[in-house]
Image (cartoon, rainbow, N blue to C red; front, top):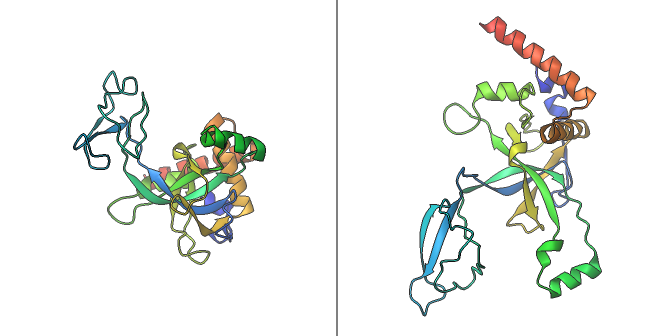
Length: 243
């Protein structure tokens, strides 16, 4: 028994307008790989008179003066690095994600004032998105099946299972949504976010929200607790039978 006995895969997803990007909708986003130690791309001009030709060194951001003292001899055009700022470098991958929230309070009068003051970043539209990670098929990358089985039974508070359903949408492969990788996507430029054309069903999104709240706060509602207790018991019983 797993989460798919509570909500069947054919009832997990519904069609959605790919331009909507509302809570519960699937989207494609750029998800950075999180390094335990941030990495700095240290940039300098190749020649003093050049603005766009640069040389760089990639290193760990673990020096005492990182983010404290600017050691750049000359500014590099377009980077616009200020004092106490560094240029970070991360690997990233295009992944499917689930929109959690997309409601931003923006006041038109204040927005114009912030634009004049060069502080647009204080009044941007955003979306919170939970990225989804593929499961392993045979050998290679992805969440291994032994772990996927446990995620299906809600044994982890930081993961949420998404079953495959190609009839609902061709991009709905089996995946694990990671609450511990939730990210902010600013505005709606297609380079940053595009809709898939599918969404979690009402029941699936309600469970998704309950699981997210539990992950963030440690508080779970009675329905989620009852389901998790039941799945934990059935998982333990199945493991005992196999051994």
